[in-house]
Amino acid sequence: MPLAQELPDFRYVPRGVDAEGRVTLNERCFSASFLVSAEVLVEHWRPRRVAELVPEDLEPAFALAPSVLLLGTGTRHAFPAPAVLAAALTRGIGLEAMDNAAAARTFAVLAGEGRRVVAAFLIDAG
Image (cartoon, rainbow, N blue to C red; front, side, top):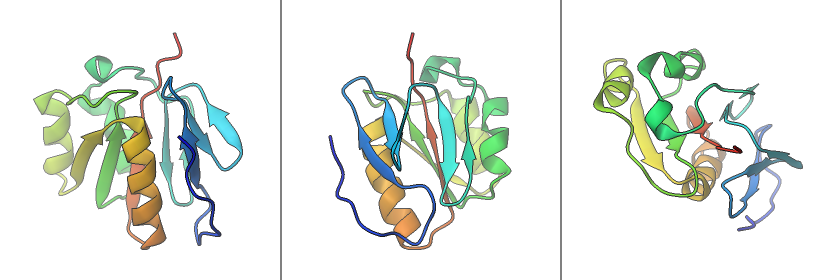
């Protein structure tokens, strides 16, 4: 699924998501889970599937001070464990789970609006 290309005011731009859920940021395709804000990329994020996600995995995302955290759950939408949701909510951070394609589109819109958004993409390349 290619996304439209425009000249954004932020550094990391999602350009597409393939059928396996791999995300292309700028011109680079990622085959391992990662976190991204408009200006910061955190590569090699530990979890690969939503079932593996624990609250501590969100700490690097929280360090980026988002108001919204988008959780890309791979090729299909899935909900994280209640403890994961609670970890965000207790910090006043909205956490929205969606498939990677939806998370990429939503990230581009919110970052383009200047919102403090972080996207956490789960990619299971195994």
